[in-house]
Length: 160
Image (cartoon, rainbow, N blue to C red; front, side, top):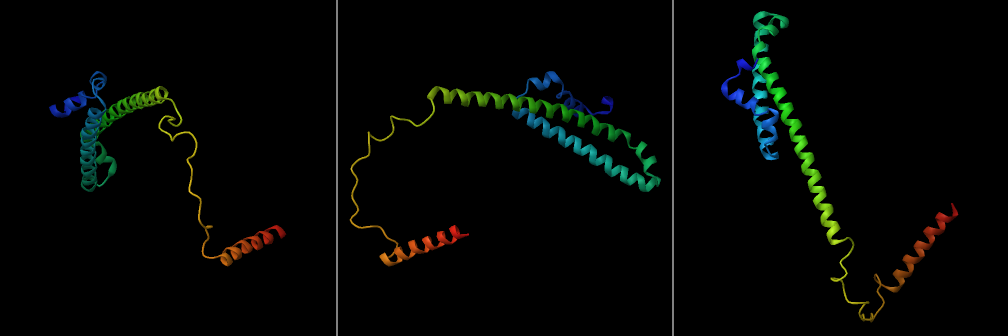
């Protein structure tokens, strides 16, 4: 099947060999992944369109299946290449995640955990200012009514 690929398609598939993939970083792998996915989608679409057209001409899906072998094979070659690149992306992403996690843990260990004591306020709480009045929500009678309503509500719950 490789013999039916054009030169540009062949080089694209050759980029997915194990040695070539090992030399690529995550961004390059993602770019290669999108190029291969476009090629796979192209040949899948061509295969589906041609197969649908041939079914009308031949009047049988089984006969139309055999006549569209080349496009189907090309789509499968690109599907396999896409799987190889996807697997390598997963490996590289996992390595990057482990490295990032290690860096973060080392950073936390080096500076310690918990609040920074040097940046906090001086020892104790400073002298505050005493209130000149009692804080209310709108009057002594309203506050008393609110407290009484709360007491009635609690008594009702307790009696159940």
